[in-house]
Image (tube, rainbow, N blue to C red):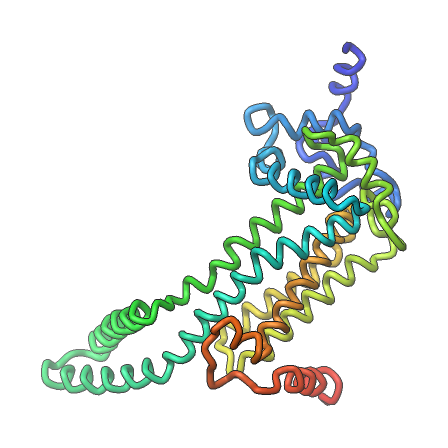
Length: 336
């Protein structure tokens, strides 16, 4: 007991706070294939401390109920399938994305299709309202500012009534993000806990299993991918998703263009970030991104959209994949 307390007192404060050299997900950068040098028991006790025990927000997140639930999900899938950990991570990602995010993505496209089909009616209402406001402004001597504010106020009210009538408020289309992002974070943190032994449920044994649970060029899932193959694959896959989304949007607004540039930057930034975290996390990120790419392609299929009762729209193409390949070639290959 005295030896254990002495070891804990010798741990640097940065280790107690983050567990790894200043980054909540990053292992020590001394060598791409080296194992984490922090003692598993010390990290586990630090992660369990929480905000009230001298820790911080990340320790509270790592010990939170959602993260513990993600850990139980991964452990249950691994025990039920009997697969090595790389297979368990892949299978769990496919199952969760297929059971949770795919239905939400279908619902998102359903809402967006209904909103798109409302645009002709909204434009017609806007034209008539603009005429009525102009006539009233001339009669009452309104200034341009008052006329503009009156037009916007009534237009918002009329559009909201249309959304209520068709039950397709655009905010409902953001439900996918509000569920997918926390789920992605919780599973990532759960895998980080496993990789450094910072978990209350058989943490050290899981860490040892992960160390021998890789495949191909990443046999140790607790180590970094020194080849950078996984990190680069994550970045390229995310960039491909962004480009496919951008090609779907004709005549994007300035805001949409700025958002697209921002997401492209995040996709590129993910490469060096992924190079500083255990391979188990990067493998999950890659599997999740590949599932996201597959879902995006699937939701372009006219047959699948019809099967899911997604309304047909004017922008929907009967040959989406042929058009997509042609657009990608025109943008990246034949563009001068």
